[in-house]
Length: 454
Image (cartoon, rainbow, N blue to C red; front, side):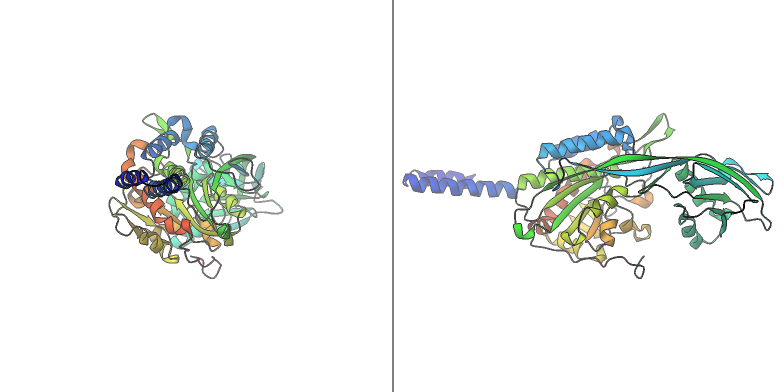
């Protein structure tokens, strides 16, 4: 303000031409100062998360009306902000098709004993499944043993490529129950399922085996949509150095009622991250100084297998993505306290160190992922591009090992700290400045191969 007053006084004593030139300089300086002081809008943060996590969004389930409603709301937000569709697109909705399969409860008789409903479950790409031990082409028979290492084998049969009867040791009852719960809601695939089935039976494989097993399945294609917009880069030399900001807008839809509430609102998971994407798009649009192209995307279908981010990644050349900021569950304080967040895969590139360098002098601190045993780096929408070598990391604050609201009907806005959440988003905005401007480029992540898979 003082600068503007002094300039006004000087203008009185100079000719008109000089006056006009000085005014132009003053306007430029004022604009630069305003740009430097741009803040993430707390009002936008509150409005967007309250909308996404409202009951009328019905938990934003994949392929459900609430999910479509959320996508339309986000597309309208991108339009309001002034983003552009991706090149070649006419709008912000990036359509993809997945295939949802629902298999009926299994009727199974093993060695003359009828299995209880929770002792046998099936995943099938066949409209009708009828197996008997007298069949000319019987299914392969597999045993999952009691050792913890055997659990991984169980999940390898979730997308059948051959008919398989799997006996699961009763020591694995917990994971078997989780499997049964997953199957009961239906499964989702990027491609139509192959005409094969897997039947899981909880119990030991008999030495002599006879069986009769039947079930039925329905497979239907479901159209989903990522919501994608961009701010073109201002430096033509950096047109192929995209920076992605992402979060997933889908959640679980409806769950078993608890105290009369059956809506899994998903406020933290991941309305919080999606809200950050909208707020960051608004922030960088106001800044209007991004050298690199910025892509803002709200992914569909993260909760059912990450199909939205997988589809999105196929539309890009990974060599033309400089960095990816994936934002997942930032609505609560991190274990390190307020004004902190953690970055998954911190050690895999210098992404985190670059971000922290841009926060020098601030109170905010990015920490390495403290939950390595959770394998979070490959459990969110950054995973596909990270596997292809992109420095693609997830930023989060969730204390996931102790978060009792995770994937429950109680993950609501009232459980979040919106002030801290806005501070996290502001820190992301400020810390991204070097990457957005082209002054910083994170090191690439070694592409994931069979030799270094972990």
